[in-house]
Length: 341
Ligand SMILES: Nc1ncnc2c1ncn2[C@@H]1O[C@H](COP(=O)(O)OP(=O)(O)OP(=O)(O)O)[C@@H](O)[C@H]1O
Ligand SMILES: [Mg+2]
Image (cartoon, rainbow, N blue to C red; front, side):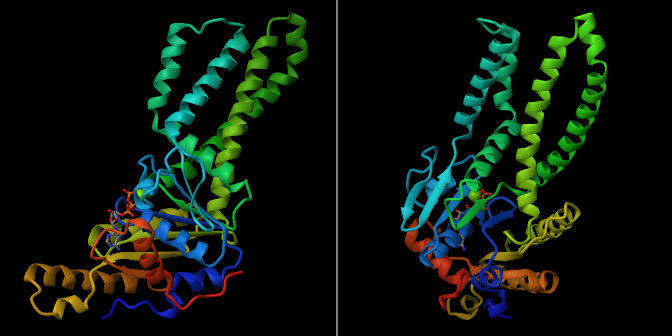
């Protein structure tokens, strides 16, 4: 068995034969290569003359590390010709939200200062993981709707979170529908209520809450529609030839199917070159590792056959910096060069 990538498995060919694709997402379990492959894909596309922005949803400054440039919280940073990277400072955005909420409360209740209990509540919300996710999706939508780039590459959070937001969009849809129904009923009583003169403020506040909920729902809908849109979006899942990542990928593919998300392909990363096994002086420890990986690679080829878009070897050092990222890109896309739209 060999780790060579056949023509049909090539990422470049996939993109060339899917010319509508604009959004490219990399998902997968933690630590297997999402950021590395996102960076490599962006680098390759930029080299083909396409204007690309790579966005990391990771709260750690991973693009900053990989491109060895200060990117975190800096907006869209130009890394090379046509290549831009964006890494948002979610905490900063959350602080901005909180200020907006404070202002809205002050305006709505005509208050000078916010009561301590409410202030505590607002402050504690910044510790909510959902707040960071919300800030991230906000930034994603902002970037996607900017229309400034030919390709948008998203280095996604580990899949559990990605799936959760799809579920959240569905739940919010039901929630907003229910509130609208109640609101409509309330509207029917509006006249009598205004005659009584007591309900007016309550309804105005409900409208405000409804508007906020609708805003959140629209944002989630936008992202979940994008993820489900096969023409414009390609979603790649990263794994390595080991048991747990294979099980995780199997489970993820099932979950994505349940949410009507098509996975465009899988990329197998960190594969020890088989040639290494029989070169002299290789310790048994490494031989066993290579044998085990080859066995799992066979399993991956059997189970995910048509979905394999690339096999990337374990490199002799961490792929950091443009030169190493270029090396990964060369392996992932092949150096042959493919026509893109
Ligand atoms: N083919 C490879 N050869 C050698 N090292 C690699 C390879 N791919 C990734 N790495 C290294 O493995 C580590 C994890 O990769 P990466 O950061 O891309 O994964 P990730 O999926 O983004 O992780 P996280 O879930 O933590 O964000 C990094 O230190 C990276 O440099
Ligand atoms: Mg990462």
